[in-house]
Image 1 (cartoon, rainbow over the protein chains, first blue to last red):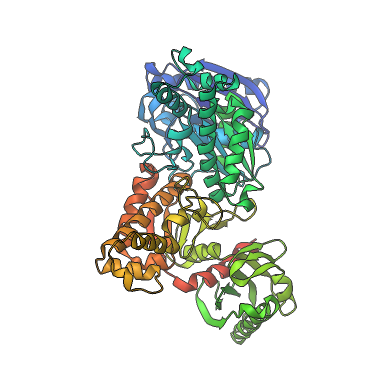
Image 2: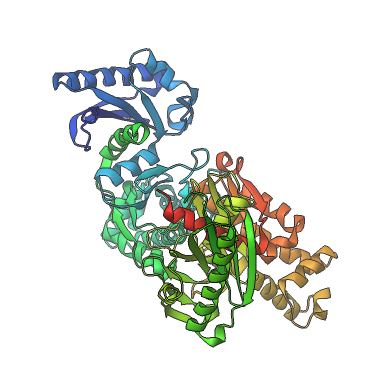
Length: 317
Length: 317
């Protein structure tokens, strides 16, 4: 059993990515198909089951069994029942995903939130390798987080831990999608950067960004690289607030490593230099002096790699 | 060995409290002597050793051995060497406490920060009994924190976890003793409440608090109970900010229980009602709906009870 293979699935709003991995996280085979969320939950589950079957065949060709399947879902799973309580990108509410999969596979299936499996993936095979206490912060449309303590995913009392994006950093600040004000993700996500740019342009600030019809965070980062003043200010401001958010996490969790993932993290030194500075300025020295803040390494593979590790976490001993 | 006794010591700036406990945390004998920090570290260590010897004699009279000694120190211990790196209330820097104790006792000795042992004590025998993921927040001159996950003290990568008082809640806010601005403890500690009262009185606000020569947080709480408007506003404001700080902890750690300790927590419903409201308003519903926010139960015993539990944490298996 200890040299059996693992299957990791990353269920996204657009694509389903999956892979067969060996016990050390080495990728044997990768697959990717469109999610087609509009075909409904049962059809999506059928497509996942098909992918699992194909990966099992590959394992069998190598005379290996499969220990189990881990799935990262873009929302809130109920681990005990195998239901997906809520996945806004898929328009899912209370979908019995594991029950659907049971019809097609006898393998044990484990669900976890996608930000959590990405953290697990980076800790196992990516930027967090060898870390005992790691936090991953994913900066995209929103801000997600995952916490790995002593090599195990930490999910809290009812699986809701790691919601770093909704920590309040500026009471009374910008309105957040969660209903509160001044959450970290209103001050530093891709969405927040675009909002800051629009507000400045509405105030009449002159910027290269005027040229962009559908302004995205990546345009702001490119303009900042080209020296656009407004874009530079926005990146600096996002880094400042993210630094405060990270400083708070460092003060609370004293991690040895913080991994920054997601599109915005691709801004490179432009973001990392002011970010690391702000993070260390906003926490106590003893914790701040030892934490490494590093970019994610696995990119889009983090999800299925972490999902495969989830199988090991749930089947050890 | 499994029915041997434990010794817990709570080293404070004013008093040394200690106790002999059974394996279930039942108190066999309690002791308290003045610290006399001005006599120097070696003399203080000698007084602790004397207390340990007396408690060992009591154990022997009951035909029991002692598994070890846990000590909560008001500062930063180096667990591996047994040194106290820094303890401002004792004027200690790099004091080899365990080495000093070695001269007088052969028992294993374990050091931990006092906020951490208090959390451990409340989780073992106090308000956090039965909790799997508990955070204790102690509100006094400053704000301390301790985190207990899966029944084990969580101290982070280099023992600095749980510094909730220095999470930044209001960037650019009031100056903190740590050098930063807007830390939780500048907005909601006993010290912060007194500062807010003084500022208001300097602005000419009429209040009962004028009568107090050496204004303390307890005076503000008493005046609030008696209906003083300024005092009520200050308690409400402290609860508001503390609620934001707790909301952030709930979003990050998703604990099942938060225990509030320290002098300010004795304000009772006056503080707890607005505090619980603000905490739940400042976190996501899934985590906020399940967390219990409760006052500490062990009072001054939490330190030595938790210190005794520390022995079990360090000697199991």
